[in-house]
Amino acid sequence: MRNVEQNESLARRIKRRGPIFVRGYFATKKNRNNLYFESFLELAALLHFENDPTVNFIDTQPATLLIEINGVMRPYTPDLLIRSATGQLTYVEVKPSEKAARDDILSKHEDIKRFFNSHGRSFEVFTEVNLPAARLKNLEKMYHGASNFFNATPDIDSALAALPEQATIEEALTHLEAANVHPSMLDYLLFNDYFKVDMQTDMHAESTIYSNVA
Image (cartoon, rainbow, N blue to C red; front, side):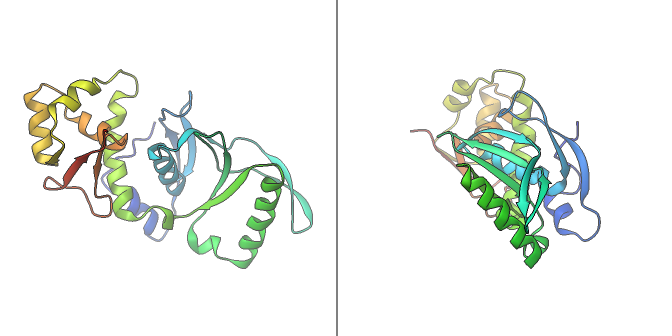
């Protein structure tokens, strides 16, 4: 399985010119199975929805449907299917923004959206614009640490008890070490929204985290 933490950040791989296709499997807690992806942008979308607390289910390439596009019935396979906590199903097309802005693609997406809306489903297009580079880089790091606990039961209570309501990342790691809690628990708490951090800038030792537990 491809690990999302690499020497070159995912954000840089998406942004640079040249081939951006890659295949792999994404470990998720929002499906019983690992999720297959076919591009760096699809991987970024999976990170985004895995981190979204309003989404409780994700699937990739969920079905191939016959849809009327530009007056012709054509097979169409959505890249993603997500289900919200309220049960709303949304099909997602993952596309680079430059391509998504083309007139022919806009027309195609309107036909696809019309089809899904007529069946009580939602449709949206995900581009790199939805996930700014700093946020994506932070999500990569958080996910890498949080994934250490995907096949285990993390001791959340001990980690929360060890941490003050506000601290720098460096201070938080010192508190966890003193309590004999694995340092990756900080990534787990951040990724799962127990703590907040500024996602608009790259995280570093002096970044401040804030408790999000009522």
